[in-house]
Image (cartoon, rainbow, N blue to C red):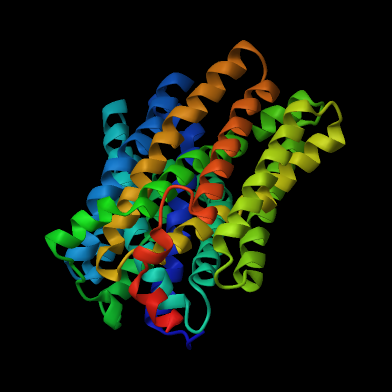
Amino acid sequence: MTSWGEFQWMVVLAGMVGGFGVAILGSIKLALAKRLAIDETRVGGLVSLFGFIMGPAILAAGFATDAIDKRWVMVVGGGVMTGSMVVLALARRYGQALLGVLLLSGGWSVLVNVTNVLTAPALQGTHSAAFAFNLLNVFFGLGALVTPLLAAGLIRKAGYTAGLVALALLILPPAAIALHAQHDSLDPSIGTIASARDLLDNPMVWLLGIALCFYGPLESSVAAWATTYLSDKGLSETRASAMLTCFWLTFMVGRLLAAFTLPPGSESLVLTWLAGGCIVLLGTMVVSRSRRLSIIGVIGTGLVFGPVFPTLIALLSQYVPVALFGRAVGVFFAIGAIGWVLIPAAIGAYAARTSVQRGFSIATASAVGLLVIMLAIHNGWFTDARSKHVSDAAKATQS
């Protein structure tokens, strides 16, 4: 990998801020609910708004990432996220909190889009795209892991308003570095109208988006219901929370292992095996009657889940020209957002009628969908995308 400078640190810190963005609402929801005197239903509305806005926002952000100087995309994303935290810090009414979440989701979407576009140029060096994206997402996971601890500590010591303002300041470093970072990949890379049409005609974009649609809910569902699932198995609340922390730690370990062990060109095969692992472990959680086996299932899913998203987007980068990658990331996430919204809702509804353990059977079915898509991609069942839609970087590697 090339030596690290401002550009590399900007991308890594942006990845950590991305992890902060997905974890912050869950980290402050109790304090926010108390401040606004709202119940869990209205808190759930705030959390749902983040996911609802993310799909269209990240799709729109892709056009900006391709069309203008990426420094300013990074600045706008970080700036809007920072502003959203200030709005949430000062909110006294539910409508103000809704505005804060709207800005948070929009700013996060912009930041995540441009960060994914810059990941390979910043971190790949002589390695593969899978190395770069898995490594970046280790930092993303680290940001998500430390955010609850930081939020709890700052709110406890400084109070709600001052604590959230302090958290807002942690978002600024990537945007500040972007103001003077230098790298060729930061320049605009807008494609032609014909190229944009080619993007939508590229079956790999749609297949990988559908794969994310099936995978994304697995990650969010286990993270949301693991403590309840383990509590139902007889674990104390403290121990169940500790097991959730172990889930996130093995999640990052999985990404780190993938970064340094995944052979170039093996992405679709590895994703096929990971999908199979998801089915086995989630199925184990559904049928388990043993406390120990249930714990193994939760922690094991972290190890298997970890490399899936980074390797999916690494595979996407190999079949999309650089000039279209911002928009490709937008389409990828927009399709994936459908699963993020619908499948956890189905799991929650089914769990309410039965149990959280049986609710995970829907997650298992989603993992089967992921396996089918990965088999289709790996074996070229529905497309000749492998030979027709190869990115500029992949062509250079092959030559």
